[in-house]
Length: 203
Image (cartoon, rainbow, N blue to C red):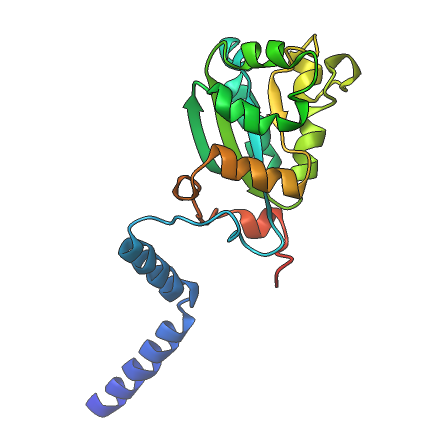
């Protein structure tokens, strides 16, 4: 009888252990890996396959009007993941590099004066086709042409005060991210809803 009970207990234990999902073990491995590394930093070119990163800057008028939270909310609700965030008083040197194609334009000095008139909030977002999606969410450069529902269509009146900047191409996004962020300022982290919101094109 004792032998029979031991055999039954052994079978039940084996079945129970085999029922435990494998991700539980993988999860422990992930925690230990990140704990060992101390922080999950990444370089500009190491994001997951099939994903992009883009730069979003809330300009001085957006900060002054306390629109930062509402702009962040739009990107979070869309499903994009924030991988970098900071507030700063931008220098003329940084602006000269950022707006290098506009240096010879007659409005450039006014642009610099505007962008240095107060702090800006700089963000890096990651996600599937985030560059083009962000441009669509931000809206046309001239708010008069921006559709309702876009950031500029909802919050801006004049092209000289259009609230936000968004990278316009993969090449532009890479250049701007390198300009505004140091590599260790961009985080590589796993968001629990990524497998739900988007299929991984890299698989």
